[in-house]
Length: 176
Figure (cartoon, rainbow, N blue to C red):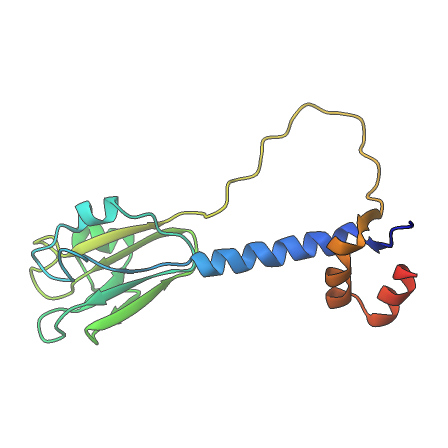
């Protein structure tokens, strides 16, 4: 019995893996309510302690829930955070239910801009860290690897991928 095999280029398989990785990361994004479950955006919550229990990644969101008559949320620079100053803010939120997307790796600083609130602890530093491990360290030099060649993949593993990603004429030609 002769088994049918499909020729699926390595690049197609790599593309499938990349798409799957992006989809998994997007599905893994989390939304955190600042101060929850014990508090909200108020002067009673210990934000330094709260943030220690969280790990934020690109794609995550943080929600500030508060009474807009009593508080606000101001994103500031590191210097503004250290000085509890919202004078040169990056952005300001005042709805009482503000969602901030953490799109990139880095540190973000937020505080309440009302007089005395930041000085009484109503500020938070959010460190957004990479979801993926860093690049592996280069190992010792070795003989040059052969150029990527086409690999034979059993039809059961490759036909579906090939029919989805390759033009119909290309798939038909490679399957026969």
